[in-house]
Image 1 (cartoon, rainbow, N blue to C red):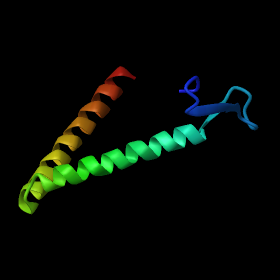
Image 2: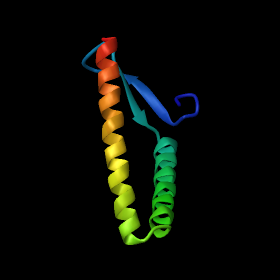
Image 3: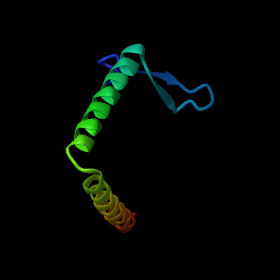
Length: 80
């Protein structure tokens, strides 16, 4: 990302071994464009379902996300 000029790294003023990464103007512009594309996609998905279907899908996705997070935590703990 640094070679693409999306971020810049600078030495920390507090810790010699720490590099602070921050977005460049180009990086911020790319992030803003990506965010706008996500909004368009979310609207398209919302429009593809009735309100009750959208609510049911959201609930199912929330449950699936909770399971995945739980699995990730268990897997991460087992490896520590």
